[in-house]
Length: 186
Image: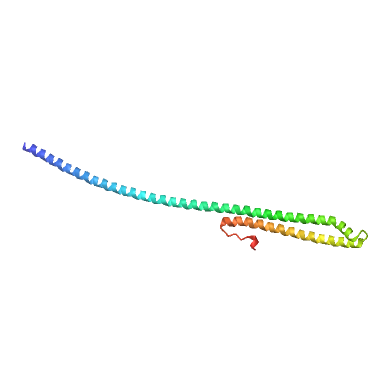
């Protein structure tokens, strides 16, 4: 019996050693798992902080872009308003010049129509020589006025063309951020 007790106690001892070894292995594995868990928690915290930092950067960039967009919209609106005002001023200037020309032409036509009547009454019906000389002077003056008006029309057309080119350039310059200098200041 003694052998069987020894065998039982050897088996128990073997079992106890195996149990202690299994417990020690379990403790070591638990420590490893706890360490891995802590490392994962730390990694999660770092990832969360990085994401928060990126979110703040994205928000700051969105805010900056929104501000820049508002600024661009304001500048475009101002350019459109300036363009409308410039075109309105050009239209008004052109209309004024056309009205002046029409008035001058009307005055000229009226003067030319009334000229013979004025001269005939002024010099009498029989003073044809004076009347023809004065009619020649009137024709020469009319020719000079006509040439002057022709030159003024050409100058007006050139000024309008230059103003339109400057306006178009102004629109392009403003989009590129280049300061605009008025054609009138040249």
